[in-house]
Image (cartoon, rainbow, N blue to C red; front, side, top):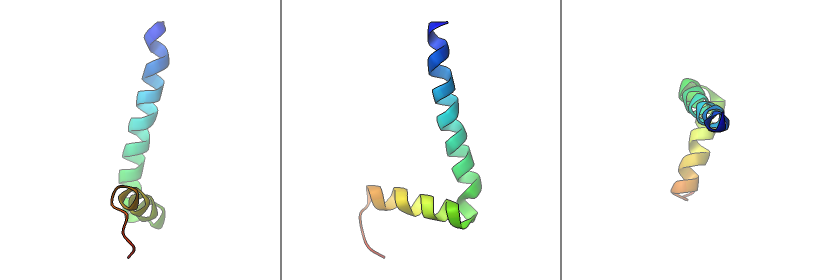
Length: 45
């Protein structure tokens, strides 16, 4: 199927998003969120 190669990527990204939201209370999650926020809004804490 031609569209079959697209779905795994979308699912993978959604799984990463859900995984990151689950880990937002852990150090790894906070570091990931901080990295993304600093990427969008570069400012030193």
